[in-house]
Every structure is written in C-alpha cells, then in structure tokens.
Amino acid sequence: MESKTPAQSRTTMTDMVLPSETNALQNLFGGELLARMDRAASIAAGRHSRRITVTASVNHVAFNLAIPLGSVVTVEAAVSRAYNTSMEVYIDVWIEDRYNGKKTKANEAIYTFVAVDETGKPTEVPELRPETELEQIRYEGALRRKQLSLVLAGKMKPDDATELKALFTKN
Ligand SMILES: CC(=O)SCCNC(=O)CCNC(=O)[C@H](O)C(C)(C)COP(=O)(O)OP(=O)(O)OC[C@H]1O[C@@H](n2cnc3c(N)ncnc32)[C@H](O)[C@@H]1OP(=O)(O)O
Image (cartoon, rainbow, N blue to C red; front, side, top):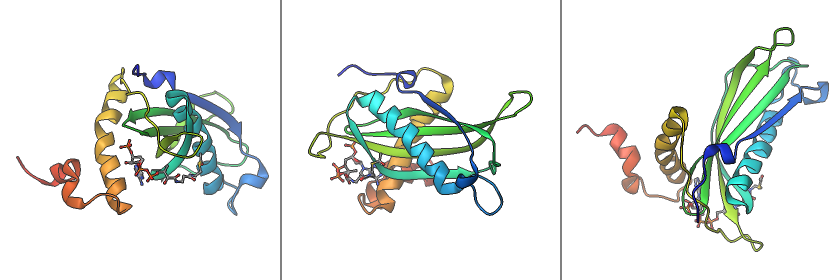
C-alpha cells in the first residue's frame, strides 16, 4: 500500500455558531464542538484510508478559548500518524475575527480512528509520510499518545508501554 502525506487527508470545515449550539454563557457548547471535530476527523481518516472509519477514542481535547455566539469557526483535521489499522487524527480549531479576518487558534484535539470493512472488522491502512516540521513533531509524539490511550483503556500493560516509560527513565 502506498504511503500518504497529511496533506492528502487534510479536511477543513468552516461554519458559524448559532443560538441553539451555545451554553448559558452564549458560547459554543462543548459537545457541539466535539461533534464538529469528530465529523472533520472522520472525513480525514476516510481520505487517508479510503475505508469506513470509526472513532476508537478521543485522546485529548483542550478547550482553551471560549467561542462566542456568531463566531466563524474553522475545524482543520489531518491524519498525524497511521499504524496497522488505526490512525491518529490531529484537529486544530480556529476562530476568525469578523472585521479583519485574522484567525486565532481556539482549541485542539487528538482522536483515534480505526478503518473497518463492511462487517466492522479492522482493516489495514496506508502508512503516513510527514512532510513539514510540525507534521514530523506530531508524528513522533503519536506513538507515546497511542500507548497512553491503550494503557488507560486497559488494552496494554503499562510494562509494555516503552515510549511512556522512556519519558520517565533517564539514560
Ligand atoms: C465516526 C464515528 O463517530 S463512529 C461511532 C463511534 N465509534 C464506534 O462505534 C466504534 C466502536 N468500536 C469498535 O468498533 C471497535 O472497538 C474498534 C473497531 C474501534 C476496535 O476494535 P478491536 O476489536 O478493539 O480491534 P483491535 O484490538 O484489533 O484494535 C484495532 C486498532 O485500534 C487500536 N485501538 C483500539 N482501541 C484503542 C484506543 N482506546 N486507543 C488507541 N488505539 C486503539 C488498536 O491499537 C489497533 O490499532 P493498530 O491495528 O493500528 O495497531
């Protein structure tokens, strides 16, 4: 299977914040943002694998900035590393200033998707080939995040999490 770059899966979705999507402070409801990120990330994972993809886990979400009613929100997702059947997808969320168009990073998240066949059985995906410096950084950190996610899900023994152990072990 031929490897692919993050650019080949990059998915950008822009939408505004409507009153029905806000919390009591008139900011975007967190669950609404999670759903928007899941949609963009699912499309990115599908573009990388050209298969049906399912969300296996949400590894990290940082709600750094509240997103006010009426904001124009852009969700950008791209595969940051691919393994055998799973893919890490990195998601950046930007808000756009109404008057000068300047974009500010509001949130980021990391999801894991698995490519499956028509029966829901995990199926192989192409490798990821990072190109830019940021893509390389995200690629290199991904195995540590995968191991942490598997340990927390009870699917990997902490003793087998070599990348995690390396964080706490001096040379
Ligand atoms: C777009 C959507 O919203 S879809 C709806 C929400 N999602 C779902 O309904 C998914 C429901 N869950 C499932 O179908 C299954 O649990 C699956 C397909 C995700 C995994 O099935 P499993 O039988 O656990 O498969 P298996 O153990 O072989 O794991 C498959 C891959 O997922 C990875 N994986 C499984 N769980 C996790 C996890 N919690 N964190 C990170 N990776 C994980 C495994 O490491 C493996 O990766 P690899 O093949 O690249 O090494």
